[in-house]
Length: 382
Image (cartoon, rainbow, N blue to C red):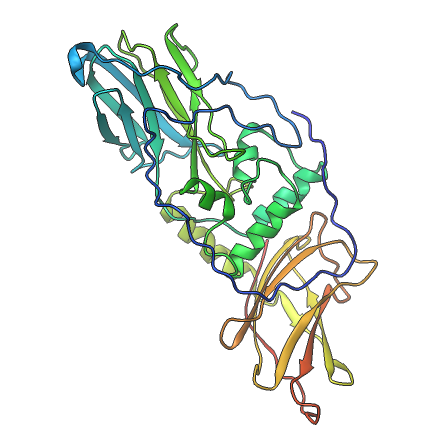
């Protein structure tokens, strides 16, 4: 697939975001479609892509069942694995729906599910998960920016994973949404809010039968779930697989929980000495502190940083980038008690050997001539 950039971040100073809204889901996620579900093809994002499965229109008639029963001689089985690395997903809910009711299953430790006794009827197989977000980092914002400028590949799965703001397109706003989530300005990514879940499941079937339809998930213009539909299910079928995609995991770094813990431990070990605060300069009531970055693991493209400072004496003003530095998106939350949290991403890497950017504070009292005391609580690079 080809990548068609739609946005290039400008070099103008980054506007500091100081609001503290908390976004909460507007509806209770159910994960279960009704029998007038919205099952639409995935919306085409920019850059464009060519889905491997051909989406179809949603069902327009009410399904019928054989003899008004859920049970019968037919079966459906498959596996659910993560889109980027093939890791199996355990504990995913998979429901088989027909006009009479639903049959629930849960994937096992190998990501497998099986319905062994379904009626010969019209069925819809729909996976869902309410697992909370994990493995979201500044690397995902970096990946989104690199896709936009053509430095990283773009697939149909990335169209879901990278669409953090849930508008059906990949733009710099998706990187902003991820950074806002990381600094605590959002409790849930907007794309997950729209769908009531951070997970999407893409059907993957190599040998569809004549009465089988694959429905691709979408975030926009209206959220819809991925599903496999049989009209009717008239024979036992296997290999009805799904690829799982987490909204916001643009670089596909999700792994099972034990792997996440190991990855976090490695990240902390690698980030010692990453950030150094330079000597502050003062102009009137405004203090400007240069931030220097260094890493033994190559260019720093993503950064999360927590600083402590005296909020009673100093008011955070904003972030200033040098005109000739690599354009970056920087989001700051200065409202958390006793701390300032910052997340930043750039497609090309922050400069080293000179300030990557400056942080500015203003003295709350005009007569305040004390020195600003700011210390690094936590720093992590991607």
